[in-house]
Amino acid sequence: MVNKHGAPYYAKFDFFRINDESDNYTLSGLGNYSGTADTDGGAHGGYVLSFSRNSAFSTFDRDNDKAGGTSCAAIYHGAWWYKSCAVSNLNGDYMAADDALSSIHWYDLPGGHYNIKYTEMKIRPV
Image 1 (tube, rainbow, N blue to C red):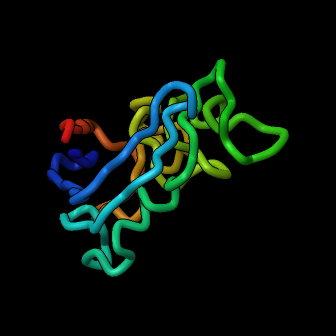
Image 2: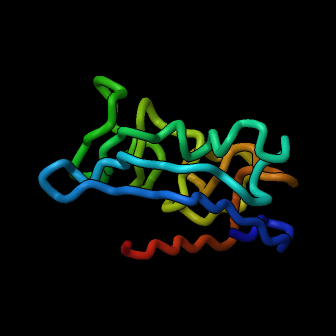
């Protein structure tokens, strides 16, 4: 991912498992974190994405989050593994505002966690 200032960061997990469609593409497995996308040097152990562990994938028309009575995908203008909403939203809107929850964001990203300019996820089958 690249933040609003153009600085690149990455988060890598040595294990990443998404269940199939019958389980709403639940993020069921997440291994050890390494990378540069935490302001605390990874002390959270990849907390930003681990917060979403065991969450089903939600979209504006498929509310699978656990927020009860609200749709995190609608609030965040995205599609993601929202739990009771999120500390990351890599499929949100590209915006200029500094604190918009609906913007692409990754909490704990050095230099500001809102308004990420670019994200890319790479997942390979094992």
